[in-house]
Length: 482
Image 1 (spheres, rainbow, N blue to C red):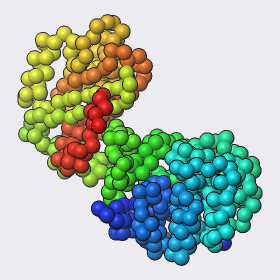
Image 2 (cartoon, rainbow, N blue to C red):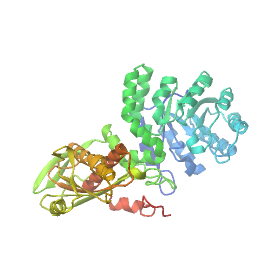
Image 3 (tube, rainbow, N blue to C red):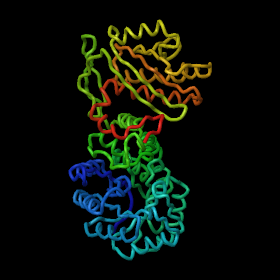
Image 4 (cartoon, rainbow, N blue to C red):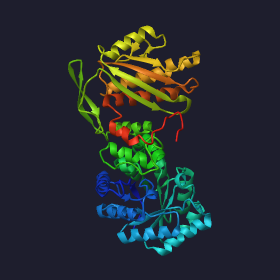
């Protein structure tokens, strides 16, 4: 008998130009198996089911069943209409799935009676165990707990996945129906409190990437090791937050960084939109912190010397980084008045960057050498040049306060992490909006932007391939231009 519990992966779907990429999908499933998870969920929200044809969904479920190797297969079979949902669920049943995950009807949004009849009709039409799926951020519909309470009386309804992110809703479900059906969390950020409240497990997008961490959390909670579970969840909380906000885009970016190649999402999902370039870089940094992306030996060829370092390459860093006459990096982080935009140059002391550094420092009264603390210059030497004219002391205090502090800390951390050699010089053009007021956010955004810009400069990114991939959909961040 099927029981909904444990750690289940809401699988991403790798695509070829016109179908499901079977080999890439198999590799992803094998990777999930290695993480020790209990189940896999093809054709869910993370799997971009709404962008797939009936035949593509059948193919994905078939691959999942063939490759599961003991993991439970929960097939996403929901659709906007009842007849289409029944057809897909019957197909999953014939293929051999262990259960089905059925999202609430969307677009044509029924009220309580229509919602109940949709699931009740499905339950009468199939033998496959049914898991209700509540995800109002995507469907625009909340499955009322009173309807869930009635549906829980039906023999074929065995559980509910809640991806509302609303703890009060989960608490109500646990109060009303957990004695009859199992409740699992589908919102990565609140897994820990959900388990503490009595949830039976999870179905998560981020489990594609860090399924092993979620397994540790689940096991710790089962063993009543609550402090251990809290410690682990905090380590992955930022990654969970980004994945919740970016869905399939963030999930695929993380997997690609790990070398589990799943390609890109189908349109209308695009990098630079729901998944910003900033968050794409932050996913990489979080995976480095977790040890999921390993540091590798690289060589800096600088001023006739070879300097050995360690760089978390993610498969995109050259083994030898040379030609330090001039390296260019750029990044934008944040939004609104506190947005940070960094353009920087990295180069040898005796090269054009070193020469420009000396000229600007002597001639531009607004240029400032970055400091970590009073009278302590950051190494390598970094010159900050404001790109917006400062008209008052308040604006100047933000540029020379939190903005420069963020730049300096990012440079120091880049050296410590092996990304940047000390024997170079940096010139950073720093944009701080005149109306910026949140000093903490200015610091954070300039720190992030500088870190990202340094990485891009050192790795020679964006590459030609990266530019070609986004050339048709890139937009200026400060101007809407369709």
